[in-house]
Length: 404
Image 1 (cartoon, rainbow, N blue to C red):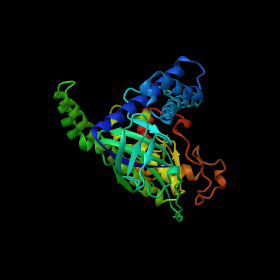
Image 2 (cartoon, helix red, strand yellow):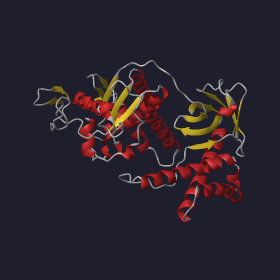
Image 3 (cartoon, rainbow, N blue to C red):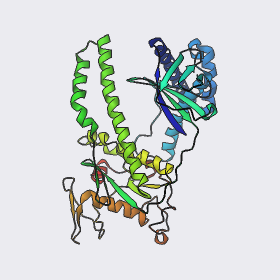
Image 4 (cartoon, helix red, strand yellow):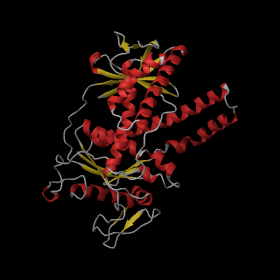
């Protein structure tokens, strides 16, 4: 499934109608979630049946396309299913009990309620809200049949409205084997250090933009609550945060793509960022590094380019000597690994070597059990990455030590 995103261009009146559709989708989702809370044994089918009842009871709910109402109920069920899954797996910490949406920003249509122009440069929404025709830029849909577009999601952001076209196409590319493997140790001083000793600089987009963010936040604080000027200041602040998030995403995509294309096997740290941000001294820097985003895109490109990507639990990878495997205790301020066996390495490079060794020697939980018969150059037998919830949780201190 490919997602093409395009910005919608219309009038303010049209944007207002899209806002009504978004609020209605939020209402349907919250009603479906309330049904699950109030009625024991509520299933996905019960939530779907509720959509028709809401359309009969509320005239404005009937304006929303029937498939869009079904999609909103499906979102509520996804939250419930995720909660059930965490409970069954005994995921450490909070299980993610479903919550009501207070400020929804999207509405999702399936195969009806919209119509594309013949030249694929405009879209018309045909449900009861009658938002009309919007021109869009940023997505090239000329090569896809209409039947391949399974969903269209309208998203409201700080700088406008966007349409996400979900196209049912399998993306896969075959690349020539490189014969190279690599281990990655994530950090804060450098974004990552690989097993060859090479480092990628941490961009620190939030830190660099903090001064501008503080100025924009002060402008918001000075405005009178409820005034038009305050709303304008809030939008200006939101656009600055949106720019930072896009910079992070772009950096993660480019870095992950480069790493995956140039190696046959990538072993990286399976960090649990949720635990790590409990360290309030490093929480902002950890969030700014966006390791989770980098891992998601590395896994994605691993499937696209048919490369092997394995996440390794980070426990004691910084403390263990990569030469003799002795445990050498060190604090976060100690940046050089020095062992009695004579091994002297950069702390992060030592950890990256250990991460790669766990995969090649079969000491990683995600690796095949018959590691002694495994050829290090043959990476075809490794399974796909399991979810972080399937691994034992680490404390915030252990995660911070491993990441540094």
